[in-house]
Length: 198
Ligand SMILES: [Zn+2]
Image (cartoon, rainbow, N blue to C red; front, top):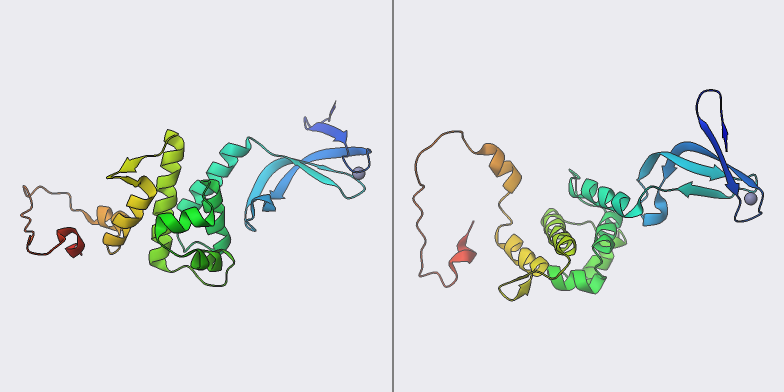
């Protein structure tokens, strides 16, 4: 290792292909290893060899993958197929698991992931919620069960009931004034009052 005049650190390592010396430099790196075409890591230490071999020194990979997932949760347009696949794998779901949790067929999930079919808006919301719920379970470290159902499954069920409620937009619209409690009337002659929620 040699320190250059401008303070940059000149690093090298042995090439895994030809055993010659690879020179490292900080640069942008397309992180396609995770199956996403659009992730660029900036200021990554990348080693190059004259034989064409390239090695990137990636920062803490688990945190990196979580950051990518959080960016996808915040995406303002509908998830692409490869993004759905990334999120599914990130929470440790097989296509079968995701099908069971969301109620979508494995065929449709596969068509989304292989970009043979666009994800519809409602499906996008449901997928994000279910994957978010699974992430919470993973962070807690054990299965969370709600009324005898796994959390992600329950979330999918509830998401279907409230699919017309855009929560973020709604919260934004709440007026800053007090009017006491809101009168609520529920018709209990409806077999499942919950299903009547609009
Ligand atoms: Zn080489």
